[in-house]
Image (cartoon, rainbow, N blue to C red; front, side, top):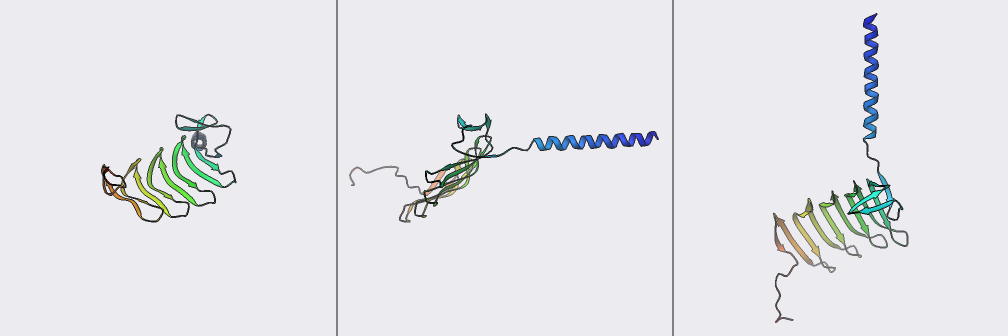
Length: 167
């Protein structure tokens, strides 16, 4: 009889522990909010977005006057983390980049209003890495270089010197 009572107490203890563990696990889940940039409780302090006085986990969407989406940016703990996209009026994609803790990470692309590519850069921890390309609106290269370490090799699109005698 004592054995059965102990067994029941042990079973009840295990059930209580399981219920407590599950309830704490559920509370650790981060609540996400998707808000418009005009939300009255959205504030930016020192580069960090707050919603209801807590760092924002979610997205901020901005709109053009005509109601079209202008941008959508993802945030974690109030800083950009995830995909950010921007559009021109009319819906043509203008910018798409991935962020981690507020820094570029991976591919960052931009387009002209006509849909032609403007730039395609690659980043790791906010620094350029690998192939970097930019184009003029007519499709010709503006920049086409490779970043290895801290050096850029190729056509950077930057003039390091100028000649005052040429016009």
